[in-house]
Amino acid sequence: MTQRSLLLIMARDFASRLATAVFLVDPDGTLVYFNEAAERVLGQPFVEGRSVPAREWSTAFSPEDEHGEPVPLAALPLGVALTERTASHGAIRIVGADGVSRSIEVTAFPLFAHAEECVGAVAIFWENAGH
Image (cartoon, rainbow, N blue to C red; front, side, top):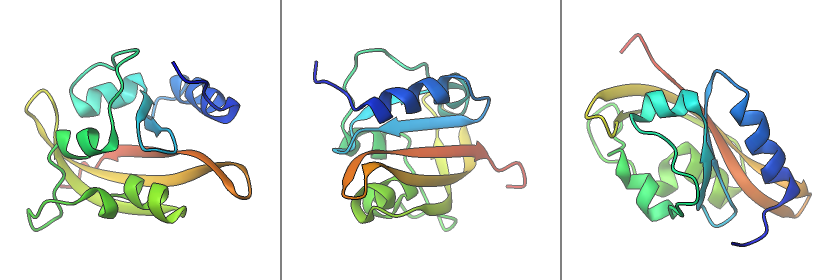
């Protein structure tokens, strides 16, 4: 197992204590962790030790825009945070592993250990009850 950044370790600890859904990835976009609140929205539990690359998690929940068009990784808020190294927000529709379609709001931002050292990104999301 590769050594994780102290900032990622701290972010995971912080996320584990939140009641809001959080999804955490390393600088390559590989899933590091999602918390219990995210488990309820995603319809599946987090599996410790399972390495899930961005190309897999970005399609696993069939993200769509408000018109029903698939949203590619580069356009997902977490994809923008990773590739453009900037905060991003958006509303998408996903289908959880439990088969339930959900409308969610996502805010994502990169995690920097130093000005030029991005160590990953975090997405905070919630169900949009109005849709």
